[in-house]
Amino acid sequence: MEKIPILKMGAFLLVTIQVDMHDRLAMQLQDDLTERIVSARARGVLIDISSLEVVDSFIGRMISNIAAMARVLDAETVVVGMQPAVAITLVELGLSLEGVRTALNVDKGMLLLQKRVANAQPGRRR
Amino acid sequence: MASGAGQIILNVFAKHDKELLAEWVQGQLASASLRSDLMRESELREQSREFIALLQQVLPSAKLDRIEGEEWTPIRDFLAGLSRSRAIQGFSPSETASFVFSLKQPLFSKVRTGSTDVQKLADELWIASVMFDKLGLFTGEMYQKSREEVISRQQQELLELSTPVVQLWQDILALPLIGTLDSARTQVVMENLLQKIVDTGAALAIIDITGVPTVDTLVAQHLLKTVAAARLMGADCIISGIRPQIAQTIVHLGVDLQDVTTKATLADAFSVALTRLGATISRNGAVA
Image (cartoon, rainbow over the protein chains, first blue to last red):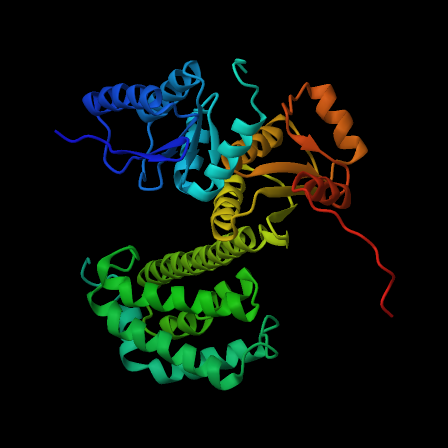
């Protein structure tokens, strides 16, 4: 069974979504990610969707869920690599990806995470 | 085709085509609607000759009252091409259609000599008249169509030309919008902007609406959509060029600009952008 690999980069986790997500894969990802955030004491999660040419409401909801779960575990989520066509579709569909920060690429995403983590007061829920 | 109907007409085209051509060209050259400034006489002769040759070719096997028929295709193609080229040359629709109508007179005068039977003559002339009316109208319609093609092509070009995205500074893009913002244009604007964000890795885009004449709820919606799309790509937007009148309209209409920064001038927006990026400009003394 395929699993989406989760890489650790310093205090952050990097997830690259390259395949079409279906229910089981999404659930698996949520399980693995929450597990990993705890075990690695991660402060941030970077979700790279640069390989996705189509993002539907299912994936949108999944990303929002992951961000919410991560926040409960005191980790920030940043989505990177959104393709222009995908951004336009999401806007047209009215999916705003509430509570999820976005950045152009992994570099910028990392910078963003580092800034947010530095600004966050320890132990305080934002 | 009923036997006999149109027989005299066919005869004229088969036997007297050269005289017909000569008389017709004569008539066109003498006409008040001749545009010798737009077309040379030799070209006019050539077009006339070709038209008569086509009629000679098509008429024997065609239904004279149905020009939509397949046999008429070469003539329809010829007339479509003629309308198109005359439209481009600057002829008016009437001048173009009168190319066809002016053939009536020489044809009628030839038909009149083809028989002494008054009833038959009346029938033939009527058939010829109807045929030419239809051809002339077809020519007029083709003219319209080619004009419409030009307009829609220009519209497309205008759409593409009028949404440039320029880089003002490192990481700062500017998007000066000129003209009304409808949904088609918004689509083009969004695509251009997002592509440029990807290409330059810009973090800020300034959308200047000085050139947008009216801002109503629809336009505001389109602007907000563009901002949302840019944000998804990791770039924030500042809207500049808000004229005092526009500010009033926005409030009166109850448009909610949410948390988008808005400035009156591009210069102010640029200042804000620089500050956001943590850049400053210092003046060291002008260089002559």
